[in-house]
Picture 1 (cartoon, rainbow, N blue to C red):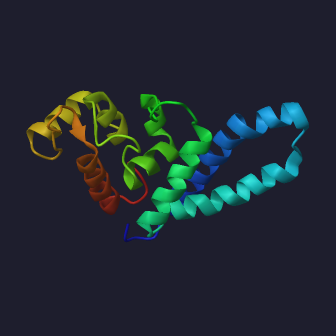
Picture 2: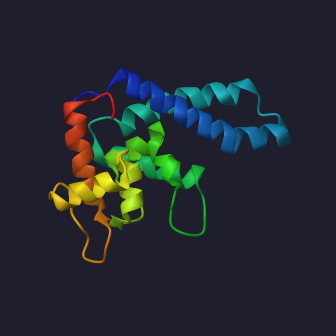
Length: 160
């Protein structure tokens, strides 16, 4: 990404990350051990720094932090496969833009639509017009989705 990240997008991402960390990690720990406000304050500080990295200029750092967060917040035995609505969250939008789909080179049309924030028909239209690329095994290439998001982000840095 060439432009400085939008402060509103950074703030929304930090808030979203803090919300997920609190609900998935801190709330259960608080029930068991009483984690207290100090840890929650630290989470708010760290999420601001992580949001700046994920939305910053360093692609490698953005991918690394996004991967760490996904691994910690969405553990599982299988590949990361979030529900469609996850892609509409600030973290989901940032991951789509900076990393694409973390575990797939191509995704079904329904996932491409969720990643792009459009309808499945919109994805089909973009495929037919050559604005997205079909994968040889079916679906849409994640690289073409990222390219589309990056072009859109360059025109409208504040979001969709």
